[in-house]
Length: 159
Picture 1: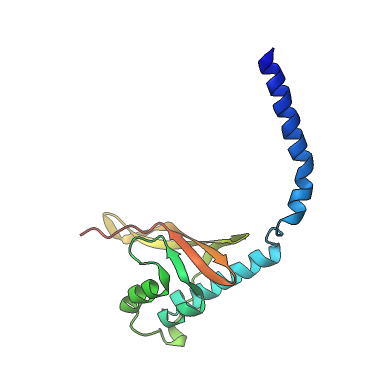
Picture 2 (picture 1 turned 45 degrees about the vertical axis):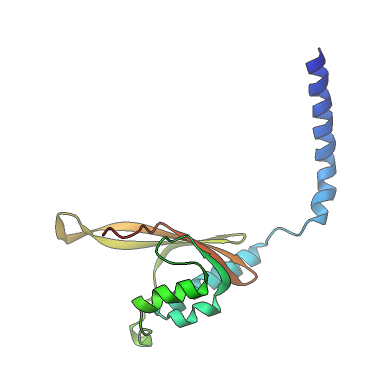
């Protein structure tokens, strides 16, 4: 019997908290709007086009926060880590006429997160004359108009 009373008391307490929740929610900051999610998506797409597609690492500073966190094991965090890595891959930007815009399969934004999905043809193992489609994913977190975090499925190279 004692445990039943505790359960009823716990239920009554939970109900009281639930009824008070709308008041507490009204005092919290607003949930990011669709407008914010769209702005975040546009920022990430612009970053991709101006930095990756154009291979112009010098523009990364326009998009990344100083405390940018990179979850790719090959690239250090921060703007400096990003530029140190990509300046070795891309010593100079592509000429504008040779820039090819990545055709994303999907660009999805929800709150402060933006997911990019791209298709990349890969050589067929055992028959390099053939290819198969592989899909790659990049996830970004945006805060105050800057990219603050990035995840992808990169692995360390085999030596």
